[in-house]
Amino acid sequence: MDKNSNLAAGLLDLPEFEPERRRVRLPRLGMEWVLQEVPYDRVMRCRRERDPNLFLILEATVSPNLRDKAWYEGKMGCPTPVDALKKQLRVGELDKLVRVIDRLNGYGAGSVLELSDEELEGQALGAALENLEKN
Image (cartoon, rainbow, N blue to C red; front, side, top):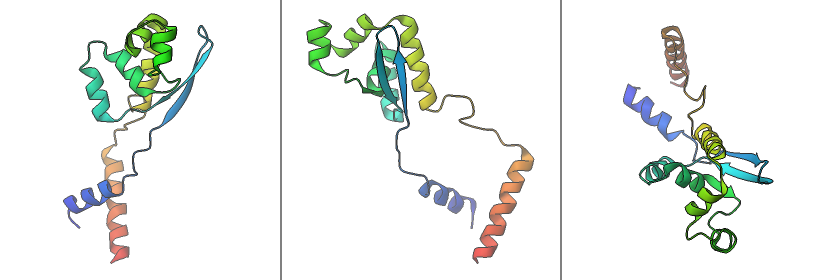
């Protein structure tokens, strides 16, 4: 099997995207939020916005429903959910929520590990032996 076949097989074996979730608590507000991992294309879309962190929080929040018009217009008196978040969250709370979302999106320590030459050789030998056993 050549390198391209191994790469293609590895990509085909990737699990279907199932967003990872975290529950966080904002003590000052007495609220619990559920945040989830955001797909790459949505993260890139958020980065193009004027307030990218607020849009990222809006995109990643499963609960509470920040897009509920009764909340952002009725309760918060704001024209958009982003304006309501600006009004509700302190800068430190916003930063910490973004850090949790970043870890969910793979920016945390240990999400990508560099392999030494010995580890790479060991994996190559293991794959070669597995291939021989199959054939």
